Image (cartoon, rainbow, N blue to C red; front, side):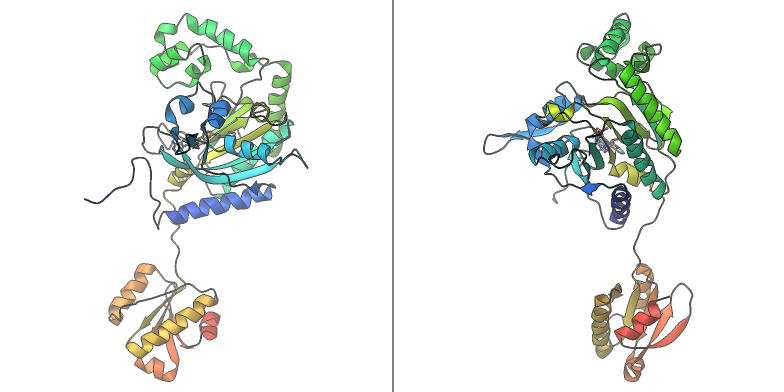
Length: 415
Ligand code: HAM
């Protein structure tokens, strides 16, 4: 029996991969406009890094990590997200030494042991961006604007921006206490998960999907009414800057992120088109994380998008690449000529396909159609003798003779 891949780990095949390349190229182009540089970090880290940054009481660390002991007895984990690794590298290589402001982006696979379904996988891919060293709300607004710019470039209007503020170590504990008092009377309504994390993480009940939790939190106090003066002012200024540049948003005071490192601004780009996997991108500020990981006391903010989810939103669009030219050749000498011409043209930057098996002209033309080549060049015995082939423009249906040299063919293809 043939061996299959692992559940929740997907192949990205030709035909689909062109869409991924388009998403990645668009991200690189847009992010670099805003001054971001790429960073590549390993896909495996010490388990401790994720436990300390994402938080011991989160679903990711409690239940979803691919962790194991390697042959050297080290506790290691396949990264469930990118922020922790990027900040670990930022600290380890002292990237802050010359300038505390670093703008970094990354792309690659992440791993979480979740129940696979449409838009949710065990190996999935993120494109993320992080900015260190700036507390000013202009950077929050710029990062969100860049993210929306990226979606505009893809022609996607669907994911819409929701923002919230989760406060800071001064005001969040007060809100937590207020929320706990509120929920205590309704504890029976909460789902088992939220009951269990009532002490450690009561905020999770606010965005829990279970009907009991939704009922229990209907009238819950809002985090935004409990921000300290500094956090309230920061949030108001983020909103002001978003409005200045025309980046649309709505406020969702029930947004609670599933990672513990967030402070102040948090956000999600949400869509109604992917069922329960509604977050296409998400992130926020993490002003305490760098110090928590043993680095200097610098603030940070970032986001990551799920590439699979972006690709699903682009489902209707066709990204297949068309070859510039298909050469149909009849008979052994013409086929040798086609092979020589193809190689010369490829060196000149033209994408060319041929038929390798010397099939009939009809079947070669069928193959050209299948490739959807822009041009077809036919070389039979007569054409070979004349040194001129018949070049057909497949979109316009027009045909002309062309000398069988790569320079001449390149000239004709330039239209
Ligand atoms: P996150 O919300 O856990 O945040 O993930 C970000 C995005 O990754 C989600 O909105 C979703 O699109 C995608 N994603 C997450 N899990 C899966 C999955 N199992 N299958 C498919 N897609 C998934 C973070 O990871 C933070 N590191 C974001 C961040 C960067 N915050 C600050 N900087």
